[in-house]
Image (cartoon, rainbow, N blue to C red):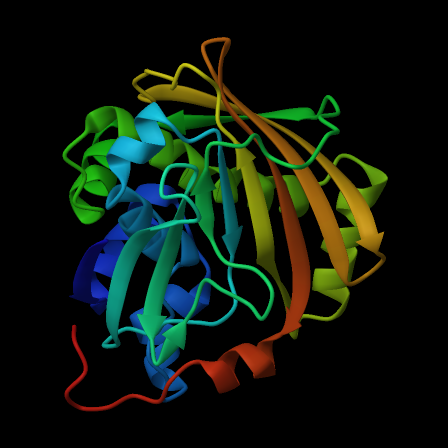
Length: 271
């Protein structure tokens, strides 16, 4: 087992959001402090730090990454990030971020790296969203997740940056489904889209690339439950090389529920 005890502070959350261009206000200390709440830790921040603990397994053995976001972490929270072998000890690694409970597990499933390929079969051609990447973004991201292997850091950056591509595909809609999601959010501004789960298919051999310059994300949305639950197929490429394919489930969550889950400000919380 590999594990690391951490406290997520406001300043590093802000840095992570700057590196990944995440503008969600629940990660903004000024906005949240006005509501008497602590900043919510980006799910991809906790995930990237945790995956990095098993960088060797990711780079040499893993063919898929399955992720569940079950609850929130807030700034100032003590969390134990850990990875442990499951089953025969060779085929899968369980990933956990524990604060009272494992925030990346549910009743029936848990987050894991596996030697098995991802379970989703479809991979429709999506619309291209090309995102510019500056050297400072990658350097900051690598430092924040404590990555010693640059290849692993570059892969995890591409995974985390996909959130920005998904956000743009919703806020700048081109398809009927994207317009439906955008309309749902704008019509009811008290609802925000959040990841329910995601599954990533990792190419073999592991992709070796430097994301500086541009990353291409091909995105195709499909409704699972209209006005509530949507699936997104994502294909990420760098200069024509496949980095990963993925299937995301996005669910609409009422802002009042998110704020109820976010913890109240305490004078001794980390900054």
